[in-house]
Amino acid sequence: MDINDLKNKQNKSTKAEEIINLFETFKQVSNRLSVLTSAKVRQKKLELNSEFENYFTQNGFEVTKTARGLKAVYQDVEVNLQDQNPDSDEIEGFVLLEIHSKKIHSPIVIKASEEDSYKLAWKNNLKNYHDRYIGFDNYQQEISKIDDDAFLGKLIRQINENIEWYNQTINDFESIDFVYSHYKGYKEYKSFEEYFKAL
Image (tube, rainbow, N blue to C red; front, side, top):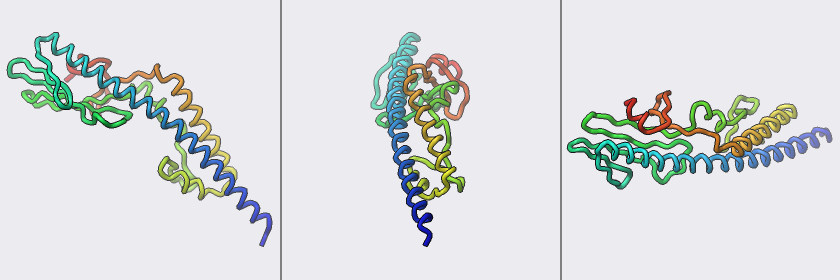
């Protein structure tokens, strides 16, 4: 047995363990960003409710609360706004706007604007050298399989860049604009009134 091979295997195993620990740091930073994003989506849902109520009240509708949202009524016309996931912590919100008399069922997506959405994505997608993605659900297994020093060095660099990227996003989070959009649509709206008029 070659003693150097034995030592190299141990060194690579130690390095992989260090990278796993670094990835866990990235995971913690990512979780902090997810908490901020979920809170912003919840806040934006409250703003949407307020905008809905103001818009319809100013246009002669009577607005009342329902179990999952709001209902605006004018004679025989009824418009419903329902939160699809009121208790979930999500990075995008989905609220359903329904006007049965017009057969309109329009999911409103609350998300970071296209201009800002890149800030919420990883700076580097991480892969092992077999081109398998390394994510939060498989990082320990995938990193443990890597035995190439150069590749491990590259991975350390990429994870550190991801950590710096997300820390910067957290520091500048208030500058990220959240908007309303149609489900699977590209157009973005700053207000409920804009969204409604575009239906």
